[in-house]
Amino acid sequence: MNHLLTHTPAYVWLILALVVARGVIALRARETTLGKLFVIPAIMLPVALLDIARKFGLEGLPLGAWGLAVAAAMWAVWSLGGTRIAAGAAPGRVRVGGSAMPLLLMLLIFVVKYVTTVLLVTAPALLHGAAVTAVACALMGGANGWFFGRLLRDVVDVRAAAGGVAKNAAVAA
Image (cartoon, rainbow, N blue to C red; front, side):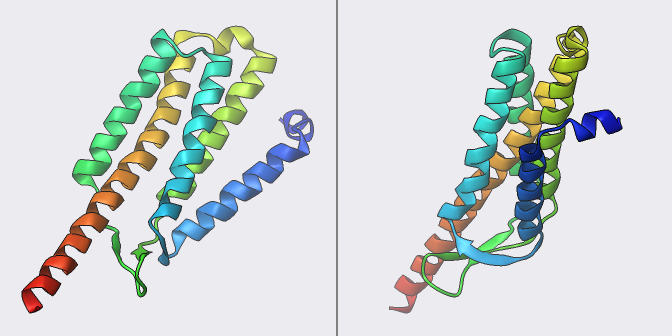
């Protein structure tokens, strides 16, 4: 194990530090713009898909496992997730509740990428087994689906809140 850690390139640890730093920011309630909420989903999607394409290909089982997990996670966030967003103090700003999920899911994608890379080097036959392929692709798909489901829910909630504010302003006028 020590051999794996010491032979991991330094840039990998830098990426891990950036993932943790970004995740720690998401732990706290904060005020931001709606546009900034697109950043993490927009980064995590190509990170996962490029890794899947490189290691497993984007057809059949890998793409199917990823796609099903995306759909399931998006549905779960949409139907089970509550509102976490509200109007901010200034126009164009939103207040976002803190959550550990972004940190956990970014770490999940990092760990899946790291473990599958180690397997690619140490046991390539194992990496290309159906079970490992399905699990790795589904884990990354689930994380991607959660990010996009949460983003979709946030956008809908912000629009609904904005519509309510405009409706109340019209009634008051």
